[in-house]
Image (cartoon, rainbow over all chains, first blue to last red; front, side, top):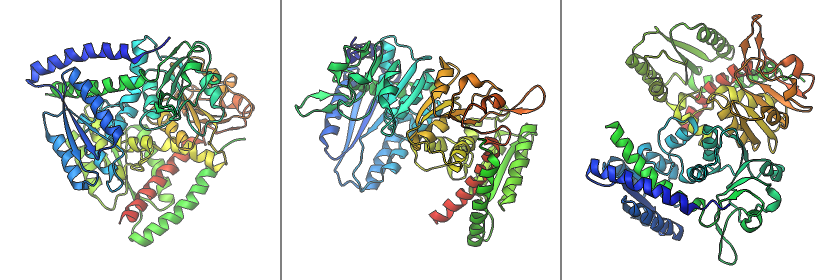
Length: 284
Length: 284
């Protein structure tokens, strides 16, 4: 079975449209995302276009704060502070990595956790770890969980293997799996016998960051596989961390690349902006 | 083999004595720990006595801030702020849980991460999670790693199972194991087939919080087992989460209870105070 993102995105859209309508009615204006971009990296521009389209499709406003690649630290800090203080802005997406002359660690932690819809601040990270409810999880791991939710796969008591331990996917995903009562194993480049660790799991999340790294010999019957990777191969096609064509016939279910996790990630970003706006109302 | 804490504590003491001497020479005064206690709970008083003795044995000063059980939120907050601002105090140990009328979440996060030698603030938790180097890990999981270090067990590439997912032991331990490149599996009350998950690991940390829960059927030859539990049984004896007498003959190495992790935990607390004082000097 192919766990396509499209279906998840459609269900989320319906829910988000209704919530945005409610917010508009209560606030007299739509929720709003600020995008802070330094330079003109093609990856950033492409993500910006996609995110903007998805935001607008449910009525969330977007304001872009674009800076030249040589922007001064202070100017960028001022921008984040301004966003923190702007009541009309509910969330902020800051593209990273920032150019080398900037103190990224300092800049990201200036952002208020309340507006940190991409989970980049220490406060959001603490929240993912200690379940304080402050800030937000990074979007990609949450998208992975959303897909399983949508297709009715429960994590409770399941053996879950995660390949990758990055701060944007592997680690937060491990925390989300634990919060849903899965038994989680985190593997990485130093893992001995990775094949066995993947094969023995019931649910596998692959965020290895290496194109088509895991072939059919890593998988077994009945598994549910979420492929987080997205790469451009030599032929110019998008591929995942999993050799999709060879693995799909073996396992019970697999998220495709493209059209899987990535698609849902953008919708989670929208959901976070909406949620941030809702939290403001709840507090008032 | 019995991995006794005593030997680890002795080695740490030697190191800490030298470091305290250096700090005294540079600062003209010893590092100092503030203990903040609300009420007179026997557990707190006993830990306070033990910690004070251990601090003084290497020349670290201790100041106790004791409050009645009905202390007002504001008074306690003022105390933490005062500790934050007191240059002579390097670390603060705040006993918890606090009485119900106090907002513990607010109080613990007032403490500066620089003085949070017990890892209770969000900033310390983020640090354990994202390796930012800010704040400190809780002492117990670090004591577990210290013991393995001392006896020469390397975690790199090892299969490590942790039983327990609490914020004071299981989760931070998982982060410390990942940082040392172990392949980590986190188990908990919802884990199906816990026995197998424990049996198949090379290194097992048991922090289940249940007296003598794991018997010999959970273990296999060659394993290294760290027993974090400490309970008083019906006969008034101290016991761990592992049925020590039955398990010891099976595995390659086991930390005893008492005399294992608990003993080392107090030394880690001392080490954190010393480290906090050293960090102040490095920054200056």
